[in-house]
Amino acid sequence: MKSTPFTHIHEKLGARMAEFAGFNMPISYSGINDEHETVRKGAGMFDISHMGEFDVKGPHAKELLQKITTNDVSKLAAGKAQYNCMLNDNGGIIDDLVIYCLEENNHYLMVVNAANIEKDWQWVSSHNDLGAELENISDKICLLAIQGPEANKLLQPLTDVDILNLKYYTFQKGTFAGVKDVIVSATGYTGSGGIEIYFENKDGAPEKIWDAVTEAGKEANLKPIGLGARDTLRLEMGYCLYGNDIDDTTSPLEAGLGWITKINKGDFIGKEKVEKIKADGITRKLVGMELLDRGVARHGYEICNNEKEVIGYVTSGTQAPSLHKPIAMGYVTIANSKPDTEIFIKVRDKYLKAKVVKMPFE
Image 1 (cartoon, helix red, strand yellow):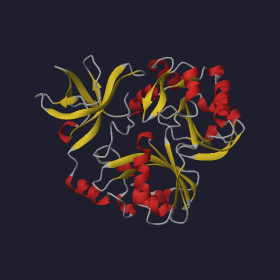
Image 2: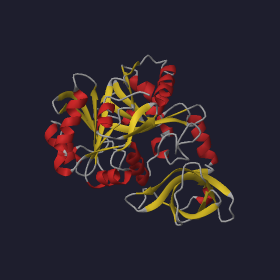
Image 3: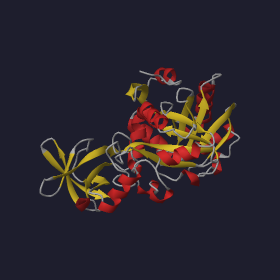
C-alpha cells in the first residue's frame, strides 16, 4: 500500500486505517457519525492526498482538454475550476474530475480520482497527439480539505488568500501557514462549505500546514475526518462516487450529468455515443431513494417494483447521520424514476419498502 505524507499522523492519532485505492487511508477517528456531524456543524480536516493531479500546459493544452472531456473548457478563465468527466469510445465515464485553470488557454491542473490515476494517465497520454505538455505530479502534491461552516473563518488568519469571499468553484494561489505557492480552492465534496489546499510535499510543508490548521481549529473543536464520513457527507448531497454510482459502463445522461456534457462545444471523445443515447432516450436513470422500512440499502442490492420484478440496483446506501434515516442512490428504469414512486429494495429474502426522492436528500 502507498502512504500519504500524513499517514504517520493518522496512525499516531489512532485512526482506523484501511486500504483505499491502493493507499493506507484513515477510515475514521472518533466514529463516522461523530465526524459527519463535526463537518456539518463545525469544521473537519480530510487528508485526500491520494487524489491524482496532472499538469497540462502549452499552446495546445486547452485543445487537448476539449478533446478528452465533456464540459466546455473554453469557458474557464484563470482562477476558475470546472467539474468535468472523460468518456470512453462507448460513451461510458472513464472518470469524473475537476479542472483548474491556472493560465487561460495555456495551463491547467486536472484532479482525478485516486483509483483511476494510472488508467486516466494512460488515456490522457495516449490521446495527446496535439503536443500538449503533460506531467503526472500526483506523487508530489499534498491535498487537505478543511470542510464545514466554521472552516473559512478559522483559517483566514493563516493565509493571504481572501477565503471568506472565495466563491464556489474558484481558487487563488497564495501563502498558507507560511508555505508559499499554495492553491486554495472552494470545490468541496461535502456540501458544507470550506476549502481545499494543494501544496508540494517539500521542506516540511505537510506538518507545517497540518499543525497550523489543528492549532487554529482548537477553539471550534476542529477534528481530523476519515473517508467513512466523507462518504456519508457526499451521499446526503447526492454527489456521485466513481466506482459506485458511475463507471465505464454508465452514460453521463443516465447519471444526471447532462449538465456537464456540452454536445454543442465541438468534437470530443464519446460525443457520437452521447448524441445517439440522447436521440434514442435513456432507459435507466440514477435516482435518490429513501427507505420507508427499517434497514440499510447496500451497493449491489436489487431494486424491485410492486410486482417484485427487478428494475435496477443500488449503487450507494447508508443510514444518513444528519437526516436520521436510511437513504440510497441507484439506477432504475425510466418508468420507475419519478419522485414518490413506490419501490422495494431486496435485502436477502426481504423486500424493504422505499420511495424515489429528489436529491440532495432532505
